[in-house]
Length: 281
Image 1: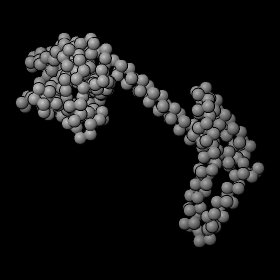
Image 2: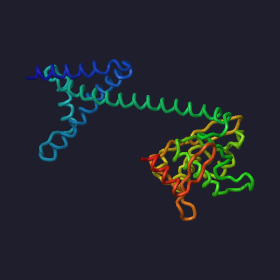
Image 3: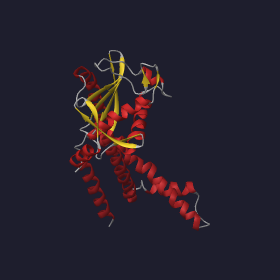
Image 4: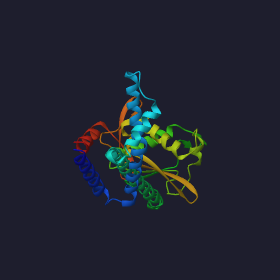
């Protein structure tokens, strides 16, 4: 019976290794090896400690914990009981393998995400050269009024209106810190209005503007990247098409905006209903 258990454990362990060895051998093999050591040196003693604790609860003559642990741990190293150590090694190896696969996938996903952001960041100067279009809009600022030299929260509604138009259409790019001619103006005035003048705070502010004016459920359809152009920072809000019609509240009325050509147009009720029936049929 013990021989069958050993054979089964060996075959099972071998199949696991053969299944995953083609994927970056040194990486996963290291996790398997480390996991095996963790199984023998950590999981095994912890299991014995739990067993001793359970035994001590129901027996007044329970052995000393160190004596109990040392006696049982030595059993795992004896030739007659090496299958016990092997079992914990296999257990640890499986845990190590699972953690290695998770780590590898996380690293690959992170690398892909970084590459995507780099590609998106590299797109900003090109969009600025091409000018405004059906998929691209320029805004000088997020909330700082350059003419009046003060914070103007009404500008946030202009941003929200433009984002709503893109959400209701095919998506697009909203560049902030750029004038109408595609020249960079920078984000310094907007950053100065934030509690923490950094990219994260700026992106959170954009998300708050969208959530407040258009609904929190459409926030996952936008994200913001940054680039430095001619020494000035520019933000690009990337907007994907919304799965539902997006309305903006204005004077207690729901207004439907749509990106059309190189501008954002407000549709009347009949136009909005007809478009929505076609767009989200």
